[in-house]
Image (cartoon, rainbow, N blue to C red; front, side):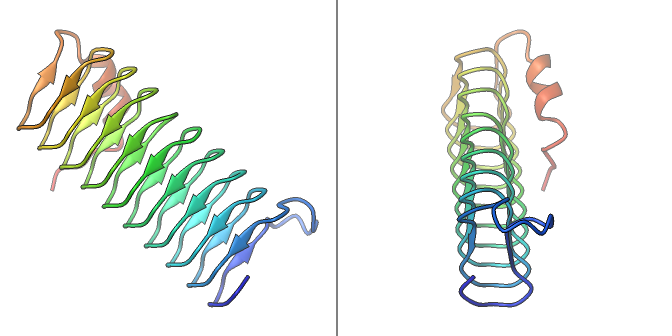
Length: 169
């Protein structure tokens, strides 16, 4: 730990080797609890698994192996190597990426959301470039942007997977 206040590098089991190489650079109330996990700064951020990383921001969680949150507020990268660049209240699952925006959810494997607000990519390989309220619900479908567009006839799996992470502004 380099500085700040109320930060923790390692977990609570009292063993020096349980979260080897974990690091917190600064900020306040940050936690790096996994092996080689890192929180560079910010406030109330948690890198909870091996190799998880958070650059900064407030109340972000990188909860799976290799998950990354660059910054922003209340973002959750919960899947293996999930990535969130920033924004507010975004969620990414396994091998999924959210670039930014607000209230976006990429919870299908290999999904991408570039930005915008309240977009969902919940089936495998789907992508939404941006816009508002778009749902990419069929596997390997893409929505470039716009408002309230839906791919495919059966988008129920996406709504079920994403509904807990999406809130309207």
